[in-house]
Image 1 (tube, rainbow, N blue to C red):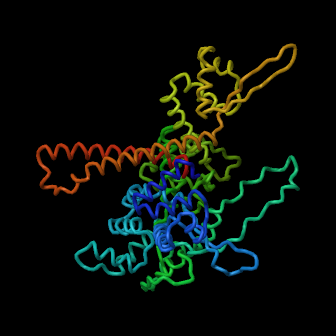
Image 2: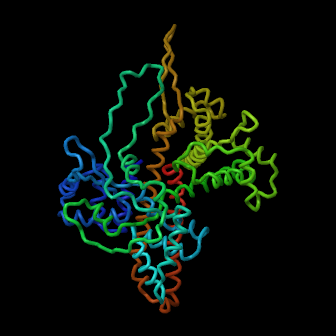
Image 3: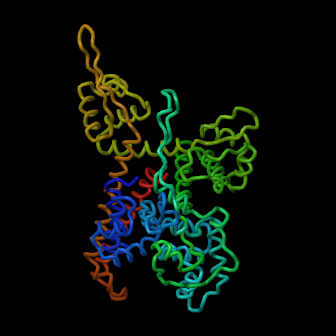
Length: 504
């Protein structure tokens, strides 16, 4: 979800990486939604060349996706190409160090360097990867060496073939809601335009993570007139590759799931959950899966035994850990499926409760926690009794939380011999989580701006050769360096929480 401060933070990242002109085009797309080339030129008041060059940069770095919206009577026409800003991909630029750390734990240094190039330069052909690898070494790097590293990245899904440059999607279909009865199931939320475009652009699973032995190494960077920006970028080579952000987010989510289970239960439950997630990673259909892929007890036990710590676990302990994870087995050979969304929800609850404790105090924390765990409307006096807070203080605290959008309030009026009024309170988690997320974007923006200010203010110190930094200058440099590291560390920790509320 692109909240108000989320958009501001995304624009700030693009400005830092690519400058004001590219950021202006990106902001226009983020705020207005998909636009044609002509609309972008009109809304941004930039020249056509400026818009075209900005789009080329954004497409190259996976921040914009072009697509064709099919129209009646204009089949196959590409004059209506539209451009969609990819909010999530823009935010992922902040996480590049985390992604590199994941690969460094699984693969060798050559793979890390290859991925670093994909993150830094965006979409690359195999020839470009070879050229970049050769520039880093004293001697030229052989094609087969780069191919082997790329193959490793593809096998673990850390890299992928680039999506279709301009997929064609059909207009959204209005659902007929007149036939739905009062007792019918609530319809699912309609698919967003971004989801439909990305699904249409995604390569088939059989080729998405596949590297042919005889890859074409043509490097034709001509811009073909009459074609959209997205297609021109893709025509640079018949086979372009990029980093697969989806897999990195999945790995980060798995880590958060396991660590939260370890904190809430024990190492045994964490080992079992980790084994289940590792065994079914390639079978997951989407990143935000509500439940794990079903596995039998024997299959889970086999996966647990593959880990060094899991060798000491018995079948009974694995079964007990599954019970801790909320799994119940209806029949002897029925598969187990762990409710992952509940673990994420619990982690979000703890994060929000921590904010309430720091901002509003212990009494507010107890009341908020009660309402969060209960999940239903409670009357003011009932809240006071359950949390042992003075009745005269309870309405003030609840009102403060409500005023800051942390609680939902309803008024209940009972008519009889005399009219009675009651205030009922509850936590509306989806709305609250969006509010908290926007606050975190705001905090991330402030941290990033402060870091940029500190680095710019003392930028001349960075230009001084290291062998000349001595005496008082060295003390100043260390002090500034520690300040920058603290700000960077705080931003990375805050980003972990951003991912918890937005990506997981």
